[in-house]
Image 1 (cartoon, rainbow, N blue to C red):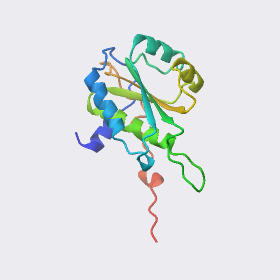
Image 2 (tube, helix red, strand yellow):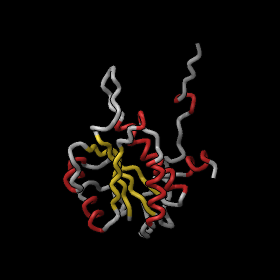
Image 3 (cartoon, rainbow, N blue to C red):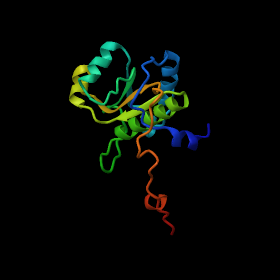
Image 4 (spheres, helix red, strand yellow):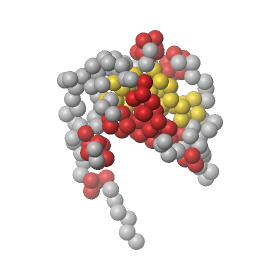
Length: 172
């Protein structure tokens, strides 16, 4: 599939058929995250794979937006390992983790696995339930699985602002 077609067709899946994602498919999704670019190639991302029944129960204590997905990937970054811009102290961790998450969501879509990026979670509950060290900052929760037969995009999926409002060409 053409990349733009993949990007257009990928949507936030909020209803899954319950089948577990096969380990080899999960491995390909994780590999896409591993290949993602990060600032100065520091690779501060850490991805927690949540697929056991116990792990999914813990996840439910952290967010209502779990959609009973059979798989979740908690994307974090290590605050001690990300690049920091010298002149203003901005760390790259959120950006690095976001690029990793996006690569994994697109890889999942290419493999027939639906996903939703969940930012609506309690980070302190995540730290507690999954025993995250203080150095790890949770950024995104990707819930994943095979879309249910009646899963469909939200009505807003194909609503786009005009590109001219979003892109500005600066010409000297």
